[in-house]
Amino acid sequence: MQGIRYMGVALIFEKIPTVPTADELVDKAFRRASRAGRAKPRDRREAAESMIMTASNILSDNLIYVVKQFPNLDDLPPFYRDLTDILVGVDRLKMSLASVHWAGAKVKEISKGHIGKLRKGGNPSVIRRGAFGRIASIVLEVDSDLALLNKARDALRSLPDVSEAPTIVVSGYTNVGKSSFVATISTAKPEIAEYPFTTKGISIGHFMHERHKYQVIDLPGLLDRPLSERNKIELQAISALRHLGDVVLFMLDPSETCGYSLASQKHLLDEIKSELKIPVLVVANKCDLTSDMKKAEADALMSAKTGEGVAEVKARLIEMLKERQRSSTRP
Image 1 (cartoon, rainbow, N blue to C red):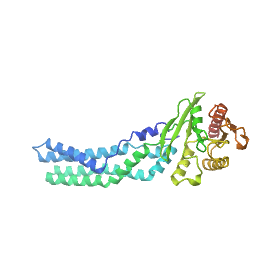
Image 2: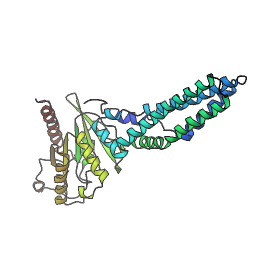
Image 3: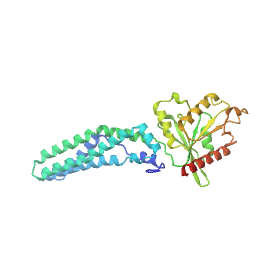
Image 4: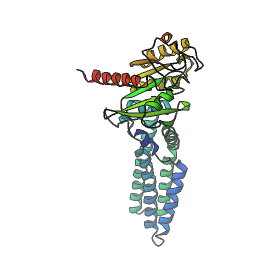
């Protein structure tokens, strides 16, 4: 994969500091400029030049700093790029970053021009006021862009931190045993992270096998109801999973103690197969609750609660991941 690797991308977003407003930047710059001017009370021309340079440096440096805190959007892995597009809009974000960068460079250009006028003998007070007016107007011109960047910063900080390890996406209706399975096969308690498309959490688990790391993701709220009931953003989010998931474990509950009929569960299975278009292992869970498991027509049976069949399902998933990896490296 080119560009930034999956691991740590969410941390990059998390470290983006709060983006200041235009008014906050201008107030900060002019306060510092005023102090710089008072430090040179005997020479009006030198004081004016110091004030212009101080204000412009603070504004330019802060604006450019804001831009540099965001990762290069073209280098983002497809999963994160798609989520960024859903939450903020990649094109809008690029335009705002370009506008703020332009403002930083423009402030420098304006200050140099006015300092040149000062050195040619112009009126210090008039030139300083003119410079302040121009650079303030430039910063205020990108206030809406700064606001969008801050909104983007808040939204992107909530993205889950995923790795680039081969990934199993666990799917199925609520209460079929997905979280129990993730907790059972993971070497540590699954992380629960906020997810921007649902009020529920995303469970991320990892496990090692033959010195290779694997990732298991359960996305409740995204894959547990018919696609026809989803809004545009949720559908886009599911689409983004194509970049992350390598195989799907779809869990059925033939006992129907989850609260959904087996027919409804199978209908969701057909939709998930159609939408994600990656290998699917269909597993009937809760074999400890019913002896009538054949009606599920599943690839495997297990009980995430008692552990029966879990090792076998895990082994089949690993083999599916290995086969997918072999297929991707074949000429």
